[in-house]
Length: 341
Image 1: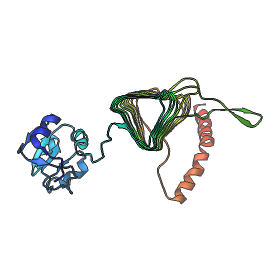
Image 2: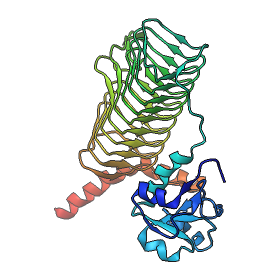
Image 3: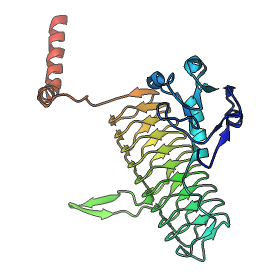
Image 4: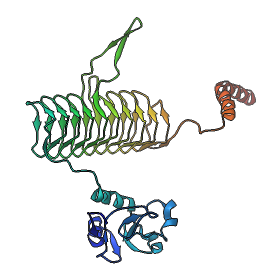
């Protein structure tokens, strides 16, 4: 058993779950149904894994009431077992806790404000005018630019860059390699040559935002780039300048949002989907993986584009037919006119 262990009774009370079993049983970790031992807790959220429930050796399982009858051990009843697992995962997180204070190898400008409860890791740089809030963690080799603000209880992992004037809300989590507030891709063309446009806006992250590893969010050209409260961004995402993302959206890896697009609240974008610039996307829009959006979406719902994989030979045939669709549509229209005449 790990150093951390908890009684089932206290777990049930914290989760608001109904316990069917022995409240004095202690668990010291989490595991899958197949791998769990007698001192571990498991959960069943995906019906695809229900076949492993009857044989689990776990000390207890978090399940929905409908599945409880098939469980051979103690059960914690929750309507949303996955949420219960998510909450408990933090109890057993082995990540080291950063101590408060400024590491001797960090560089903090005298003009910066750093709360006494904050932690500034080795090699980190905090520039003039930056404001680091209570209980903030700044990881090793991260850079907090001039006048940037990081709200209370936010975690900035190692090698993160917050450019000047970036605003990060409370309880945000920014993973390694992310760059927030880099210059947007703005250039004016004159006789075939590109002339750089200074990017004068900021990036503002709301509260409870998560930004994945190596994700980039560009600062605005004139207005700010704004990421709403509770937004979750996966790894390797590109958010261009002046984009606005509404509250509680979630985007999977390799999504790309072009400049000045406005996205509503509670949207979910599948991996590698892309949205062209200067568009408006309604609330509660779900894009399936690799969807390309080139026009406004004004109604909530699920949207898709692209074609599924096929053999190369069949795909090449279909690609030829796709190029012929406009000609075919015109021929059909002419035939319809003749038949009506």
